[in-house]
Amino acid sequence: MLSKTEGRVIYCCPLCNNKFRAEGRGVFLCPSCSRELRVGALAEGTAWDAESQGRWVEAIVATTKGAIAEPGMFFSQVAGGRGWVRPWAYALIISSLVFVISAAYQFGFQALASSFELTDPAESLAFFSMFPISVGALIAFALVGIPFGMTAGLLIQAGIYHACLFVLGAAKRGFADTFRVACYSMAPQVFQLLPIIGGPLAWGWQMVLSVIGIKVVHETTYGRSAVAVFLPMILCCGFVTLIGVAAGGWIFASLISKAV
Image 1 (spheres, helix red, strand yellow):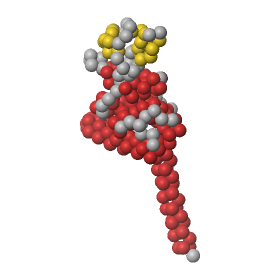
Image 2 (cartoon, one colour):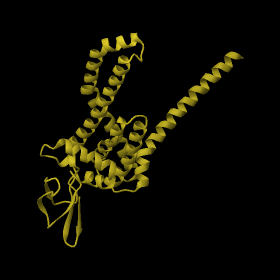
Image 3 (tube, one colour):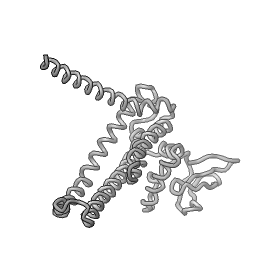
Image 4 (cartoon, one colour):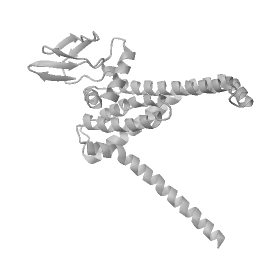
C-alpha cells in the first residue's frame, strides 16, 4: 500500500507490514524482510496474492494477521489484487487447517480420556477399534468434502452479497471482487481453535470483516455494506421463524380439534 509524503513514496510491505520510503517508483527490497517489491500502484494485493518466492507460510500468517488486526488497510490491498484462485486457495487452507486441528483435538481428548479410564470401557474399545476407519473418513472428507462445500458456500455467500449490493446501487466492482472479500473474510476462522469462545468469536468477527471488506472494496458506505451482509441473514431467520410459527399453529389446531 502506498501514500505520498514530501514527494517520497511511503510503501507498506504486504508481507511484514514494515513501512519504508522509496524514492519514486520501481523495484525495491523491503529493509525488514528483504522481499523484492514492485512499488508502482496504490495497492498490489495481499501478501498471499503477491507471494512468488516460496515463502507461503509467512504470506498466510501475514495475510491472516493483516485481516484480523488492520482490516481497513488490508481490504484496500484486497481491492488492488485480482483473480479468484489465490483467495480461494487461502480460504481452503484456513478451512482445512481449522478442520484438521479441531479433529485432532477431538481424537486426542478421546484417547486421553480412554487412557485415564474416564470413559466407559466399551466406548473406549469401540473408539480404538474404529480409529483407523475414522481417520480414513476424516482424510476423505478433508480432501473432498471441504473443497466442494467451502467453494459452494463462498460462491453462494458472495452471490447474495453482490445481489444485495446491486439492488442497493452499491456494486461498483465485479462479482470477482465480492468473492475475494468473502474468501479473505475467512481469516478469523482461526479463532475456532480457541475453546468455548472460539466459535462465536470467529463467526462474529468474520461478519465484521465482511462489512468492512465490502465497504472498502466497493467504495460504498458502512450502512449499505451492513445491509448487504445482514439483510439476507435476517430474512432467512424470519422465514424460518415464520415456518416454525405456522407449523406450531397447525399442530396446536390439530390437537384442539381432536380434543373437541
